[in-house]
Length: 94
Image (cartoon, rainbow, N blue to C red):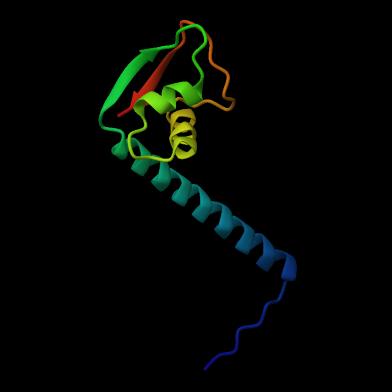
């Protein structure tokens, strides 16, 4: 059996780093696809004055943890922050 020798530590570390980045991108894309598939029933909602993600989640999150539902709402609508504006249209899974 042939012994494997690491000639350059820097090259090996770079290879492992690239491998980790590649797998993380693949798995994050798979997670996003699963999230999109789980949201077959989506309604378009126009935000009213005084609406918050929490109040919207209380209306639509049936047996789901509200914090998880808010996280999913932000992910589906590509929101980085929780700020909503009156007249804004968001997608709500139900």
